[in-house]
Amino acid sequence: MKVVSALLLGLLGLLASGLLPAQSAAPAAQRSAVFAGGCFWCMEGPFEKLVGVSDVVSGFSGGRTANPSYEQVTAGGTGHAEVVRVSYDPKKVSYATLLEIYWRNVDPFDGGGQFCDRGPSYRPEIFVANDEERRLAEQSKAALEKRFGKTLAVRITKAAPFYAAEGYHQDYYLRNPLRYKYYRSSCGRDNRLDKVWGAEARGDNVPAARRASPGSSEESIVNRRKWLQTVAGVAAGGAVAGNLSMKADAGTFPIRKTEDEWRAQLTPEQFRVLREHGTERAGTSPLNNEKRSGVFHCAGCEQALFTSDTKYESGTGWPSFFRPLPGAVGTKTDRSFFMTRTEVHCSRCGGHLGHVFDDGPAPTGLRYCMNGVALTFVPSKG
Image: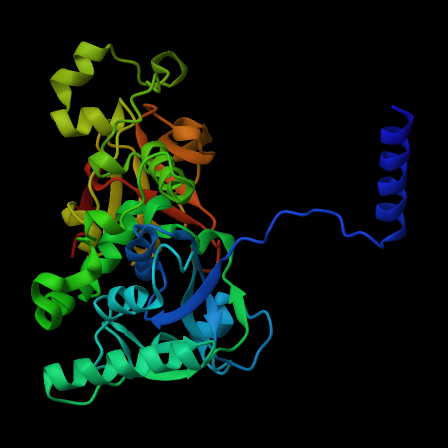
């Protein structure tokens, strides 16, 4: 026992003196690849499905300005492009596979931007970190040029510093599914990808052998996004009724009616939105494109809510305003779906109208994002 103790004390002494290295866990064999393919919102999803990919982060690279903001990059002058940084295990997914997914999510013939997004910040570009990545990238580009019979516009350049974009851009396609889908469709991205790549378009049909298997470590990113989908109500396109006991407080407003009375007065869709706090599908309301002069009223009680001169095109697919009429609406905190938002309701009948966000235009900086089905429009006379 004394001999063992002496040996242990000796080993501890060597560790303390630094003469004997302490055991440490081997570093994870992770690498990262950076790609520019237009709007970074649209480039996250395809890579996140791959087995071996542990994270995908939206950001900026290829420019001169350190730690740029989204506004600076899109305004031009920084030299940066919108990019995604893909973290992956090369033992499970190869750089060649990442290139395969990349190509099928861009228009390789358009060097002036991508789809509806124009300018240098939306240019397609592959940032290579070493000679091997450059070889593979140039090899894949040459093969596609041979296949299509013409030169591709995608640049292959040396990797530059990467700067992560603001938090609200990360996982945008899952956190804001309806706005994302509306943007992607209106931008013409999928139509163009289908035209260029046919059945290969978008890299969405990732072979089963490449997908992260349930329970594996790389599946954690998939699980996180499934959770985001659940709390955001993606599965039903936003129509998962916020019907989680979010009924309007009928007894707190001037106009009070029973549920049966509201059902008799409103259409089923109006009742679902106004009285059950539902959300209409983006782009389905004719009022989204209403440009005449007039006043928007509550569909439940006809109270005037917004005037046409406060309406603007937000690109979300819902009628949006930067200011309501005085006293026309009320707000309250909405914590449904594990999120904290500000709900907007009619101050006269309590009908749910939508939500207000702080990303609107001057002079208020607010965006009152309203369900068109909750509104009626009365045009000005003359």
